[in-house]
Length: 255
Image (cartoon, rainbow, N blue to C red):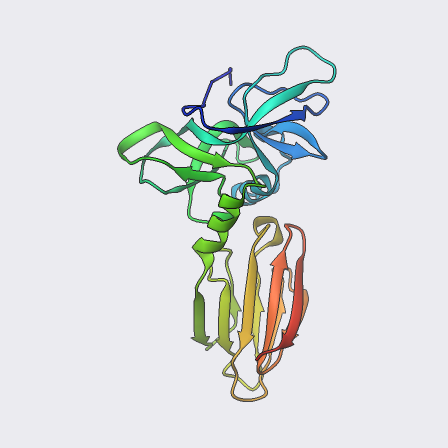
């Protein structure tokens, strides 16, 4: 896509980063860091699904390019890490505060450089819509915040706060959108299996899992490939965190 000056408000933060060798960046591109170097969204290696691409990009997102590459050799480009931009989108309506993620190309194997899409999952989000669009539109004003931005980190946590208290009647599979705190009673002498979401779509997702059994009943936590991550006994709790490639667990007694 050709250069598009996306910034709509002048109160923005910026930084300067070196462009990765061979990368081409246009003004208005969503860009990310690859081993400390700048690349446009479309350069992100395919993670297998649109959701996984969005999740991976959100962990690496740096900002919106304010300059374009020219020629060859080492280049430093200015990037807006926090600002209000008018981005392309598929024709749809929007409400103030709706979250936006990077949009997937029609091919389904790469992201768009200058297009956003709606998401309900904070860990996929790059920012949020700053005004209502009651009629369908193909351009939307959004505040985009780079991964280091504390505001978006707080937003990701806030949207998933809350708890799910449940007495299980079968094994349970969690999704990245589920509440962070899971208070689960296995309700079975044989215990229950809790399956975590796929790692590639769960970068930055975490859960607090509390076994509320009234007897010696276990919760066996597994990844989506069936590998056991941990076992949570009666009155124990586990903290589970995913970095996009691996689920990790810390198990402790509940107080």
